Image 1 (cartoon, rainbow, N blue to C red):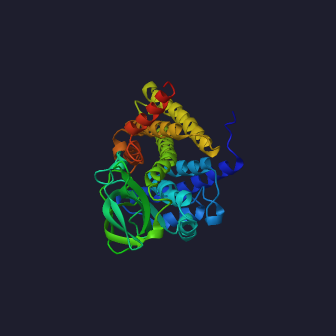
Image 2 (cartoon, rainbow, N blue to C red):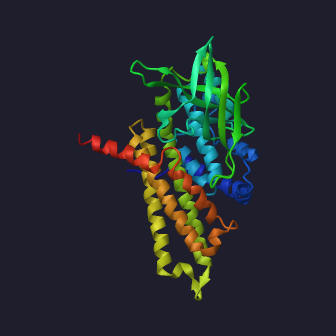
Length: 385
């Protein structure tokens, strides 16, 4: 097996790391403290090529393989979870459904500006009563006179309510199947449409510098052509989007773990107690050793899942494994990072507390850890049935 990255991937890692350290790191703590989404940094990330990573250049994308995209997310998350969330959601949840399921008209209209980082797009799945049970959506759309009329609400939608947000893909019920089950479809809704309200969410524990929105649809009318793909394909589209999106959440977990590990190691070498660096105490050495070992295992698991996707092999279970393991390794590394910093780990002056807060969503978003275990267990058991 060849574990070497290509020259292009190594160059990408260096360029994204340099950008994250020079542009994001100096302002990350203040943006988090003030809960400020930076349109300026988002546009700069677009100029660097961090949006539309896997999209064909025909539509303004970068034409990368999936592993390269994941490396880019990892490097941003190594410095700051908020900006990694903007990139990950922008690619996997915003651009992805339009690129993979949209019509040629949709792609030509939306993708160039989204891939350039000039605008953002949301992924309207979660509702107040529909989280892990995504099929419990209550938002509805009825076809009237060549237009879809949407009513309902969404919550916790990343990139949906910023000034540069263009719109969101809304999963809704468009009818009933013969057996009475709801028919789910996805419809593109632009911000500013009459009856469509977006509201920024604040006072979050994590990702305070990313944009999170609540969406309200009150008899919102959009053209019939805004249907994404075929009517009734919405649930399948959403599941496919989440399968790929889990890899980017895994990358956020891996980057968070790496950043927390590096911060912990540097501090442990500098901080002295009892006349010597705290890194010299075996209890702390073991923490650092465990962090390094589990990060290495997480990286191999995630990169293998990306290799499967890039080679058009089944990757759903491996994506669930990677998302689950990387997020839980991030949890452990962030916890150790705070512990090694002691009291300083609880202060905003050090990145430890931000790693600790930002990690927490990774075990919840795009499928909780419990849901990932269900996905994995079902596949494993099916092999014996």
